[in-house]
Image (cartoon, rainbow over all chains, first blue to last red; front, side):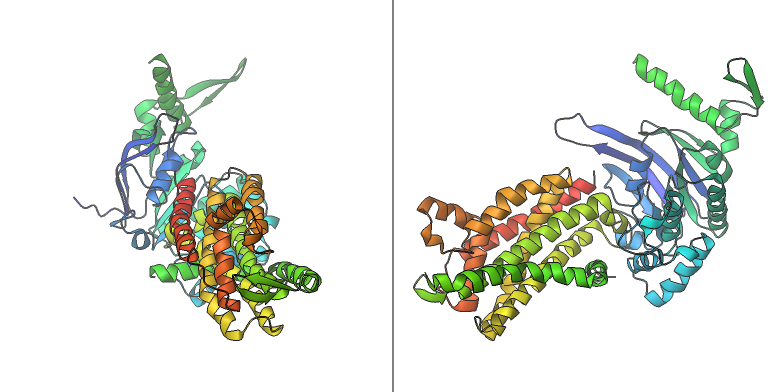
Length: 273
Length: 255
């Protein structure tokens, strides 16, 4: 069955084989779809398989088995066609330190076969939207960590993508800048982009994502809209939390409770095996 | 975008970086071979006079100029690929950034090798040009050397890419630099005819790629007799190193 979703991930598995060590199954048969105009979150502890999944979805890693289709095109069979309208911001800093802020936006556009006359105004508009216009002529080494992160997200938008993959995009950003990025991600979703986002910040996932998948040890434990996950696993009752000895705090339940409950429980199970 | 278009697009990235630091690039590209040319060609040459290569009499300056063409190919190709690609892979993550656009990692690695080769060929051309200006090489001989210079540059670039792929840290690149590149520089016929060495060292020298490259470049620039070994040694190294280096770098990046 062909799905019309922008991103289709079907039974994706990735086993790392390295000599002298037992094979490590980083992603163990995950499936999900992302519609146009939908922001889909991947949540999970470090080592859960988030980045591996994303690297398989961009076509950078070859999966051990399973399919990834971007706009209906198999990313491993036809990477060039599948990635025509794919914007990627990886977890690592991959900015090209040999170029200035503006030049590397333009250079990156050429990797999508775009003409400089098309890219330049687009790059300038993006830099303005991301609050980086006045740094256009600086080399990236002179930017702060938060600015570099912003630039990398801006660069992901240079190909005018229909699919945006953001691997922990707000790491290292201060709260104010994070809000700017949240607004921009919101705008992208409103424009109909399909967005795949991984994050450590529960507030971010709850705020931005239409649906969230909780990933643990390479498997999706549950996948639903954030509010639904909360009522399903925690309930509607106010949570009482002892934040310091003798100081308790009452608050509505949130995604963090779900995350801790699901991944924590499974950790205990794993240890007793 | 075609595969060739993709490779060209990445090659242009390298060229843009080279062009931005053109002054520095020209100094590093030309200065080093010029040092050798002057020290050995003009300085040492008159003391030695002539050298006999398989029956052909050459001035020592001609002899060393042809050797320096080969040495330039090796140094430029190897160092740009080994240190350059390590930096691009490990510190800048240029490969990782480009390989999620419309361009694939395979194309990025071709562009890397072709760029390193271009830079080596460019530097070797400068030495050839100097040799033509000083009257040591004929213009036709210098031109005829260019294709083999490109293939030899590719050979050393692939060796550099392989070393970068296999090195855990940038310091580890020093091992092959001192244990392989410098011995080749000294013992593969750049400075003296191989016949001066004990026979077993000659055999070792002929297994290493630089000896064949030096030999064929002397044939093309100065008309020394063609040694059949070059038709075996250069293709084997090229056919082994090119796919091996690409696969090794690919495996380093794509787990």
